[in-house]
Image (cartoon, rainbow, N blue to C red; front, top):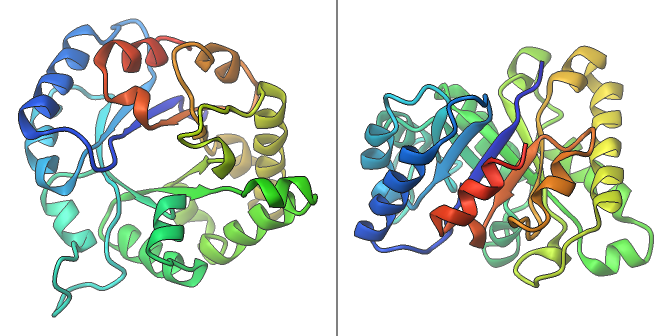
Length: 251
């Protein structure tokens, strides 16, 4: 049975003291009667400390926001998957639209990163999404299929069980615009259908697919009630404990 997952992607936000307060507030108010997995994705500097804070909470995990496709070496400023593992991380976010756009990461680059993450006993949150022009000209389904095919469909069935997919319509990130629940469900259903084509119904039905486009306390419940939406990759709304908790409680 697939998990409901809510991931807080902090991006390049929060001073250390504010980050630790936020985590403490969320942990102290997590509902005990729900099995939703909660994932904090802080900057690398806070990863180890936050992982220690979450150690006693079985359904709370920690994710890096990125990692290098290289294992080690003379790559100043980079962080390896092995470093994330030894900092007690659980996940790595790979292929976020901001990484694709600002750092020109290709699907081939992302496939290499995915391999490094899995080789270091971490799980992957793999992002895919289209621009407004692609949606308007009707190529958005093909675009998503290409991102998945070139980024993660080289994996065998066993490795694929360690993949979480996050669909993030780029036109709805940081714009205040949210895809309607019908639009989001349509794409999530499409993604699940191509997982079924590639890996079969068991993996398709057990893979978590998250929505990552301006999800907030006001629309989370409507999104999460859709049959193929299993949670959210949350940006701005994860930076305030009350908002993040409201989203977690939307299941």
